[in-house]
Image (cartoon, rainbow, N blue to C red; front, side, top):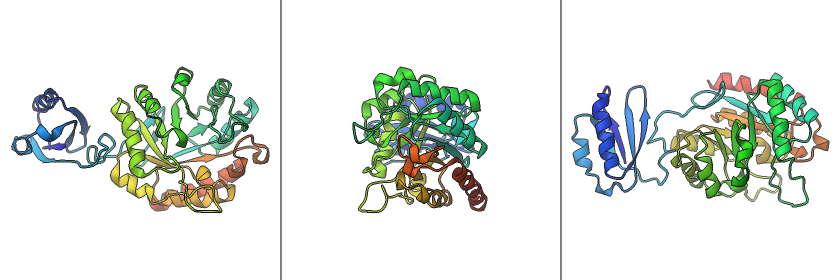
Length: 333
C-alpha cells in the first residue's frame, strides 16, 4: 500500500502517522521528494482501513500495490535513486563508465589497464578476483591476491573498484572493496543477497542468464529489505535461441526497468555478446536506450587473456568507443 502525503505536512504529524503504521506491525518505506512524501507500507495491509487513512487531513491519496516487489518499486519511490561511490554518482541523470579486464592476472596488467581506461574517461575499475567458470579446469581467478592487486590499481589511479563476490564466507575479504558485484549465477543466491543487504555497500546486481525482470527485481528486494538501498541493476544478456552470439542483449529491459523501478540500470555488452566487435554497437544502442551506465571488459592483450579475451576491447578500442558514447549522450540529453 502507498500513502501519499500532502505538501508541507508538519513533521510531527508525519511522524505520528508513521508510528501508528509501525504499531500495526507494518514496515514503512519513506521516500521524500521535492514536493511530496510517499509512505510505502510493507506487510499485511489487509487490516488497514483505506477510507479512514484517505480522510486524514495530511493524506493526499492512498492506493494498493499489486506487485510483490516493494522497496525497489517506483510507486514506492517515484524519484530516481542515485547510488554514490566516492565521488561517482550512478543514476538520476548521472552516467557511469565501468571498465577493466575480466580477470586480474598480475600487477602490471591491472595497473596498465586501469590507467588506460581512466584516461579514456572511465569512472570505476572492474576486475575479477573470484571467477565462477563453467569448466572447473578454467582459470578461477587469483582470489584474495587479486583483490590486493585491485587495491594497488585503485591507489595508482584513484578509480573505485567493482569486483564479484561469490560466497558469504569471503565477505570479510571485501571489506575495503567499493562495489560488490553479484554475478548472473548468484542472482538468486538469497542467503548471499540478505548478507549483502546488511553491508550498506553499493551492490551491482546482474540479471541471471535465464531470469525474468520480475525475478531480477525480487532479488534486488532481498538486498533492500535487509537494509541496503544502494543497489544498481545490470542487464547482461539472456540465453535465447540465438546461435551466433553468447547471449541476447535485452535492450527493452532498460525502459521497462526504469518504468518499474527507481534503481539505476547499467548494461554489460561484453557478456551479452561474447564478441569484441559486437560490443561497441550494443554499447551505443544501450546508451541511446536510456541506461545509466556501461560495464565493459578491456584487456591490454586480449589474445592472451586468461579469461574472456574474445569479448575484451583493447585500450585503444575502448577510448574510441568512449568518444562515441559521449556523443550519443549529448544527443540523448
